[in-house]
Amino acid sequence: MDRRSFLKASGGGILLGGLGGLSAPAYSQGAAARTLKFVPQANLANFDPIWGTQYVVRNASAMVWDTLYGVDEKIEPQRQMVESEEVSADGLTWTFKLRSGLKFHDGEPVRAKDCVASLARWAVRDPMGQMIRAIQQELTAVDDRTFKWVLKSPYPKMKLALGKNNSPVAFMMPERIAKTDPFSQITEYVGSGPFRFKKEEWVPGAKAVFEKFADYVPRQEAPSWLAGGKRVLIDRVEWVIMPDPATAAAALQNGEVDWWENPITDLVPVLRRNRNINVDIADPLGNVGSFRMNHLHPPFNKVKARQAILAALSQEDYMRALVGDDEKLWKVMGGYFTPDTPLYTEEGGAIMKGPRNYDLAKRLLAESGYNNEPVTLLVAQDQPITKSFGDVSADMMKRIGINVDFVATDWGTVGARRAVKKPPSEGGWNVFHTWHAGADCVNPSSYTAMRANGDAAWFGWPKSDTIEAARDEWFAASTFDAEKVAVAKMNKAAVDDGMWAPTGFFLSYQAWRKNVSGVVKAPVPFFWNVSKT
Image (cartoon, rainbow, N blue to C red; front, side, top):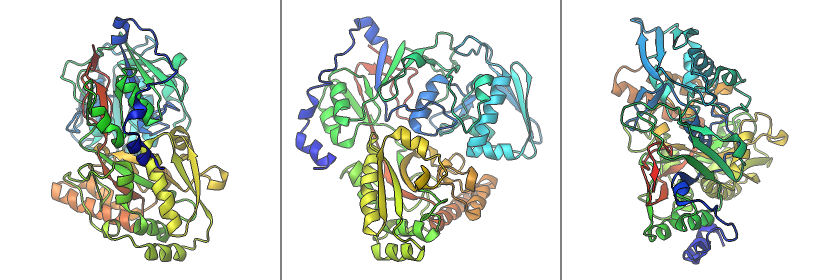
């Protein structure tokens, strides 16, 4: 019996036992109210927001490290650590001044040299950072609170680059940490954000703990996503890792945890029947599912093999496996950008929405030279999204004659292994599943998965001059109509290249107990301005 059938057959009865033999800590009522227990989407297996781009890492990092700017709910960048900025008349020199009183968790003041080192590390890994780095003349500290970025040509989207919420986010770290090689992981977790990370209490696979940073000085503006006043109203946040959805649902119902980031759709009716629980859509901009292929190694180093996947992959199968039969929660995509947003286009995307054509897929696969070699599919079992997608993919790939090497693992391992460029036989991979927050996919600016600049691209390392040229055309566009033309070209080029395969657009839920207030709809779970009674 599969997961969905089992949960339906159980009728919610499996939820009554809570955590079984696990006893809850004996908190006083006051201490319990000051501690928020949160079930994240996945285990926090590693903790470096520049080295790793998993959302679970980004979400934890937003608590610990602050940003120079932060996007608000309109995805517009606002000042955060920055007090002011000046741009020269020719657009080539940006001068930034930090707010006074900013302090790291170790008691040291935040200095301009820390920001310079942080930006230098970030710019190596981030697509927008790479663009700035390519036109950089110098990035230097002027004094303790002022630094400047001098460019060879203008970059009007500078503030968006420094304030965007998609990974890698431009988090500011102490200089000594930021000097770590951007392709190696940091081992010290000191930031200047509203929470400090309790490294001594970190048990990967079980728990991560964050405590209020008493010396954090929030901005005075109203809070809005990563912008505005980040006021911490609780003393401690405990991330409790619960990969089994039934266990997480039981814990939420019994009051053993306070907030569950992504309850699976099957359990939502059960949670809604509990008068002590709120359930709502987590983010109205939703998510774009992804079947990500490695362009470096056979068979997906050949465009016809990638095209075979586009011909065979049924987005409806993925969506029904993950979200269920409620078609208000998902839709099939003929493009790569967020549906129902201004730049969404299905230019060239008929192959992704038409009837599935297994005969065409088999022919394309044969023409690519594929000869039954094992194809390594990484599937994280502790993440409901990737687990559901992986099961569908294994069946689809076998149907068109692919010899599937199904690697059942955890999300942390996927995060590490997908960075390996070696062949699958040497620890690399051919396919992994992920998803992209719709807020990250509304335009090309911060859409990491749509870079096609080879070795510098996101995992899979696609190389397409046509895709990159269309992206550059969007950045250079002076009107919205010109932007739409550029994005249509980019979408068609990505389809023609078989860059990667969307598995559908979907909305997801979040659930929290009614004694918790301040939970917002956003692509990131924000813990500031959240309180518990």
